[in-house]
Amino acid sequence: MAVGALVSDQQGIYAKRIIREDSLRAMYGKQGESLCNLLDFGLLALQEMAEPSLSSVPTGIAGLISGETRFIYASSVLDAFHTCVLMYSSLGNLEEWDEEEDGDDDSGEQTAKTFYTQVRDSVIAARPLLKPGFGQKVPLLDGGRPTKFGFRNERTILHFGVLAPNNQNYGIRDAQAKLWQLRSASDFAQVPDAALIFGVPHQDDVTIGDKQRRMLTENIGEIESEANRFNMRFVPVTSIDAATQEVVRRAA
Image (cartoon, rainbow, N blue to C red; front, side):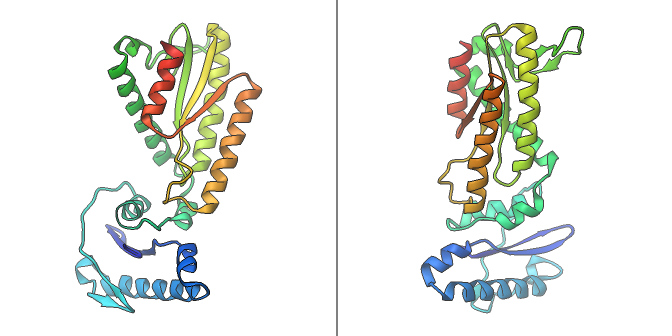
């Protein structure tokens, strides 16, 4: 199991401890904090020694033994570290990096688009007759410019999105905007059902820290309350299959 990682891009080399501090405290008691400091020191030393490239990383220092170098595609340094956590550290999370990187609208938008595309393809594979409903446009008011929705037929109108642990501010803004669009379009088009289907992580996801978990619970509750206030439905799902079933149930 990895306790830290070095990531290199065109701008430089970055080091980060990826094992959670609470995990070290659980294993080593009061000595857990000292071990965190030792790991941080060792990783910083490896980062400085690695300049200008990862090929210069020493085999070990301060009790840390470096592993093999792997080449991956990542949209950002944060994304690369998340890959390290998912592949090599079951006791890891990157809450501090998430807070620093939160607010990346481009990343949040791309994640939401990927989720929508996967749900759309899954629904079409399961129910081909629903294909024409995806990407339908509906005016929000009389004489207004039509707005594109995730799905629309005579039974339901749907929007999709993602509430990612590392970009919750974007997810909330996206949900609020889409709830307003759903309310306006459903009133104008007289569609009986309107819902916002959002991908969310499992509560027991090992890459999510306690702080992120609490924020997710609070934010999901807030979006649900806002949706209910306007007679909309907010549907959090933890998988593409669950989202597919929800679309089919409402639309078919």
